[in-house]
Every structure is written in C-alpha cells, then in structure tokens.
Image (cartoon, rainbow, N blue to C red):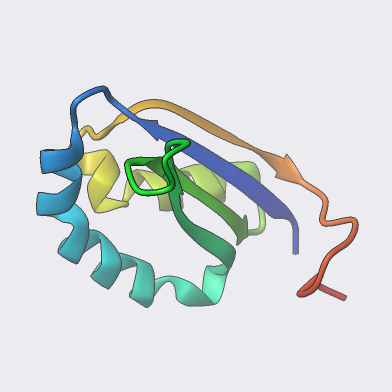
Length: 98
C-alpha cells in the first residue's frame, strides 16, 4: 500500500487554538492509528513551541490520504497555514515497511 507524507504548519499565533482542539485531535488520531506509520507534532527551534504536524500515512491513493486528512479536527478548526500531502517512499530507517 502506498505511503504519503503529510506536512502541516500552524498559522501564526495559533497555540491557543491548537491546545483547545488537541484532545479531540488525539482521539481522532487514535481511531486512525492503523493508517499512520509515524506521526506527531513539529516544534520550533526551541524544541517546545508547537508549529505544526507531520505524518507518514498508508492509503490506497493520494485522494484517500487527502480525504483522511480533511477529517482531522485540526483541519476542521482551520489551524493550518499550509499543508503538503505527497507520495513518499521509505528507503531506510527502523520501522520501514516490507
């Protein structure tokens, strides 16, 4: 099954929005964990300030990956400034699919 890289960056000054939606987002993520090879928040250079989210997900098609991402509570809350969803090939690293 194809893999896709999802890179999303938060809008400026959106920490309060992210934190208010986070519990719902985490519930959603747990329900879809079987589709996620790796994922989590992205931080600013200080290592503490949330600035986005990145995931490697497994779907039959790019459109399926886009449809899945559109159901994320963060997306519905309009948290992201930019989103990139592109095909991904895992070439090396622990956890590489067979």
